[in-house]
Length: 335
Image (cartoon, rainbow, N blue to C red; front, side, top):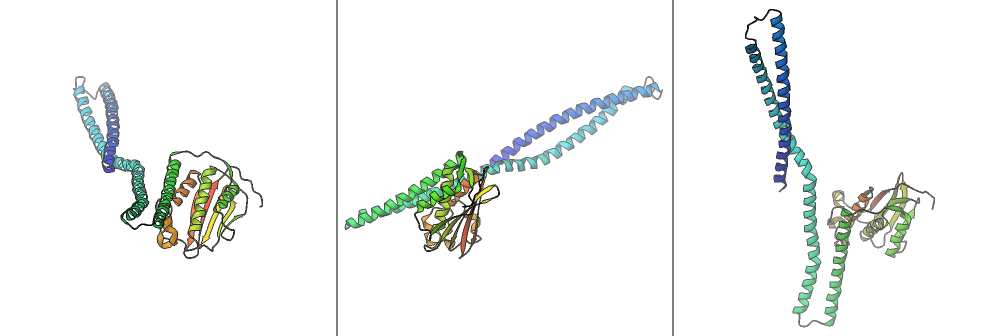
């Protein structure tokens, strides 16, 4: 599809270019021919005045011959020039068409992959629920306890579908909408998020080095912190400590989320923000609980805030996510 579109767009670019080139060539030919005719006429007049041309010499024949020869050279030069423009313009038009359509093609491919992955992720819980219900219906010796277990399992799958649909909707809203911004206190937002996890300080701790505010959307930043904290808790031993450090770096509000655990292999790091990407080999056994959308959503939130999200990891030691959010007004005070 895009190959055909590229060729069509190349043709249109080349048509426009050659139309302009032909028009300029015609104008150049007309102007040059007129100038040559005037100069030859002046030359003929000067020669006749000096007596170097017989009074009845076929001056018009001389001028016509010179004009025809000059016109021939001009036409030949213009033809060569237009051929070069045609060849160079064809190559340039193709490259320009490719460059123009490339972002659209990449977006189309990404959308296709996203739709395929989303469809797969949505089918998996539904298939599980269907299989469990079919087994129960076929089993004539089903007990009340069996029914309760199936219903409980189905409720868990429904909750997974709900979380998945919420993430997909959030991604869609972020990609197609604009965030309302205000000055937010990073410490307040972070503490509110941490309280919702209801974990002891031996498991989750917030450390404020400097108090900073950032310009952003409070709900989106809250979602960002929740995703990163949840990710750090999910992929670390239950008896380890997850630390959220708040600080300021230049004109940016900064927070780091660090955990100890399996870490992430270097060859996997570039892909962790891809949608539906899950690297089971370098993650904990709980990696199957996620859908590979959380970090993608976090990345999108940071991008919409013109910030930066980076990750460093040492396998079998620790992983640290760093977020920088720009701000126009930063208050600094020791806490």
